[in-house]
Length: 77
Picture 1 (cartoon, rainbow, N blue to C red):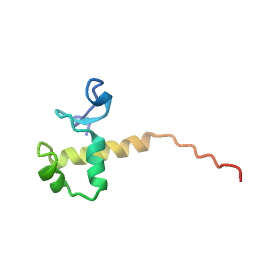
Picture 2: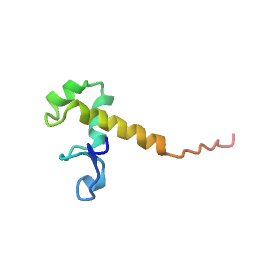
Picture 3: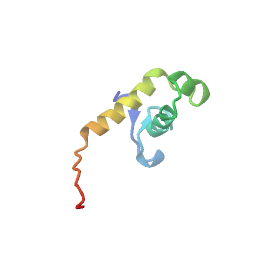
Picture 4: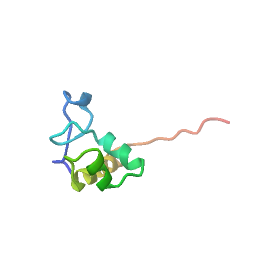
């Protein structure tokens, strides 16, 4: 995954992108969220990607969430 995702402050304000492209991980995840298949994303939106790039986007999101330290605070009733 590490070699497929890059962060460059000069590209999309430092948002994580698929290496060698200006395609953000967020853009790929949004298409997946809309229910598009890997094949649809590649054929209809980003023909320069392959399945491994899309999997890397998912893995990046999982790693990001896994590294978060979340503290929920219950509001008084």
